[in-house]
Length: 342
Image (cartoon, rainbow, N blue to C red; front, side, top):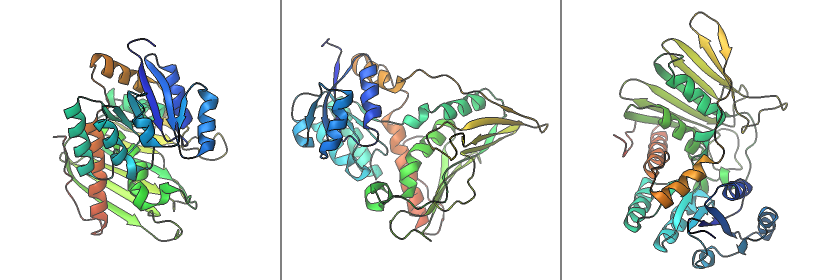
């Protein structure tokens, strides 16, 4: 192993485990050394991709093993804070799945600890690297639809939600936190203006077997009048586009790809620019360097190269979602989030 190799441990090997494993093995400077999960079947799955990896059924044992320099925490959101804190106290760099934590207080404590220990703390904001989002951002950044003033993003349909932890408010943080960790991060990556206030609504009308809202909406109003709306719905019999953006010279839509017969959330949306004269044109997806997020981790740890994704951004996403939940308790009345971003 070279002196620049960063030894990585995966804490929990769920649905995203293979993605992390493949990315780590494809990124120069990273070596997958350990995987931990309480489910032996998942450890078996991990070994199929990385047969030389050491496996653990106890996370604390893995963190204390001395085998890892960086831990990827993929446990449910309500445990992110505890595992990240334990790892940082042991001198281990931390990469967290979304959201960073369920409160800004927990985020702030983790960020302060990481700074004190001079360690990396970062959230895997993988949706910032989605081809449809990057294509849409390119359209906006190159002034193809003029000055943008209205932005909507949507995920969902009409379907009975799963009974896993994603649908348990105490574990996931709720419907706003579950997908909002992705889509609100995208919004904040596009809009430069300061946030004025946030409003949120949670509708609970049909699916009583889970505690998440059936339909959740977050509206973010910025000081210059720009408004962004995010909706996560399991009651949308008429599905909205994934993206709907209005500018002073045109508009943009991101329509769901139904080529597989039904909507697959992970397929890139089809981006269309709608011109002021009534015409429209499809926009080919931009190209992207694979696993660039992981490469940026290596560059940061080895050479202190700044990353485009930083903890402060993910913390502010939590602040907005937290404000939206507070607003939902008072029927959508405005709440000003406590942001680090000016």
